[in-house]
Image (cartoon, rainbow, N blue to C red; front, top):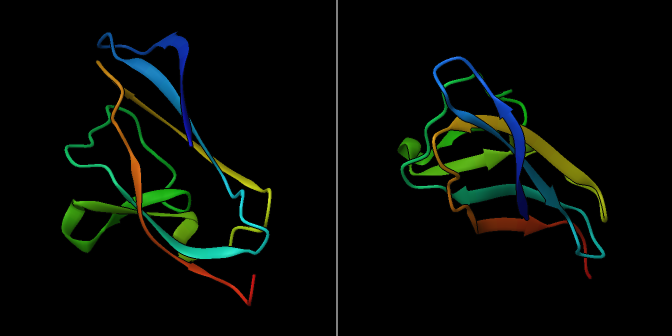
Length: 96
């Protein structure tokens, strides 16, 4: 997973960050959850790509749907700093 400072600043002075999550597993994965404690954003994030799950401590990627091998899911958020996001849980489709 990679978080990139886009260099774009939105009204209010927050920086836009692009998050790219690439499935490097040879199989598809689903129900990918990230630990993103304290996450906040001043712009809307597409809930199909990234939304609060499990009381807002963990976040579900791609609506829990499968992410094929080597595919990337990306989304943007804006805040005055980037947030550390780490994988918490996922399910692997099929034997790998």
